[in-house]
Length: 431
Image 1 (spheres, rainbow, N blue to C red):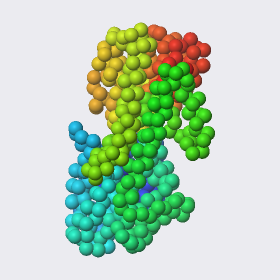
Image 2 (cartoon, one colour; image 1 turned 120 degrees about the vertical axis):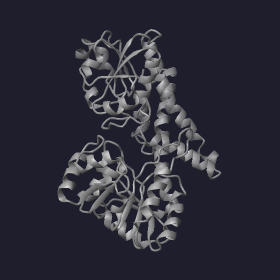
Image 3 (cartoon, rainbow, N blue to C red; image 1 turned 90 degrees about the vertical axis):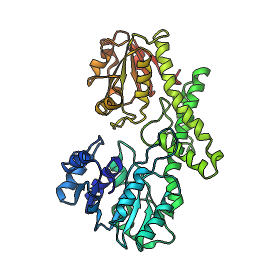
Image 4 (cartoon, rainbow, N blue to C red; image 1 turned 45 degrees about the horizontal axis):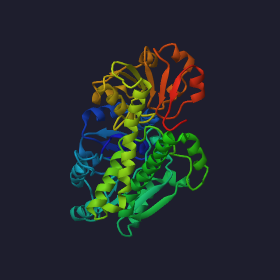
């Protein structure tokens, strides 16, 4: 596994757990040292147990030396593709550097497998470079579909596998079938296609999910001015089998390291290919998503009689989603920062993400305990729907705050229960 960040570390541990001999390679010595000790460098439910099991078998090790890739039959590229600074396009620096260094250790007959999310055309370029440098070696694109919080399950029991093959590369397909023998034996659907389609699958899937989320958030905006309830609306349209209820939860919108940067990179690549008009709708998808954050700050001001300056606000949640410590493009922290910039005393709590949040959002105050966060608060804002927060007792929390006001930024609480306990409750798009 070349790259032992979120994708590579999970994939390495899971592949070793099912019986393969795996070496994970990363340029970060601290990350490698943690993994060698069996400690994940990030929070992911189930990963510590898989990592411990795999390390105990002797089939999994980690290294900072690319030379340790020599002798492997399959080489997975799992490095990051962040958004370029000041641009929408994906930054392929890490992919290109890792690939260039790896080629020296690839032998004829080896298979290089790309899992990173890349702009279409990247696989074809790398495939040609590989054939030139190492005749007989082949490249396959095998996109990942991991959900943070469910990454171990999604790796061991994926809902589909996609192979993007160069021409009729049955040899590489047979090798990947061996790698994924366990999920294939369970009946996991396999889609075998060309490299271009395989690269498009991931960004198309993320763009569709982002569109669905932004659609229901647009409906929430309409419900607020029309007097409707977006949660009931989502339930009603979700019963249509053609639509479905998943990803129709209105609220702060999406964040993290995938959806935002992937839809922007998708638009940028379409423009490079001369098809920029094709994906213009994604600009509005992105715009709606970002608008939700400003709307949350506006509601906070409304609930505090027009100004947040000098008021104490408790923010429940820092991670971009529950069951993760990932704060990349976190809507919760974006809102917290906006309120802080307008003079509010913001106290943020989260079960897992405080350490990662503090590295980037040093101007905010972070507290580890919910009761400490809400003590004396003029407003409580639920911005990441951790089960811990959904299970709070409204009556008990009311005795800790200065004023019982709560903003439900994820529309995840029971409005009747909170109002019944004396709280002023506001959601997004809820009557």
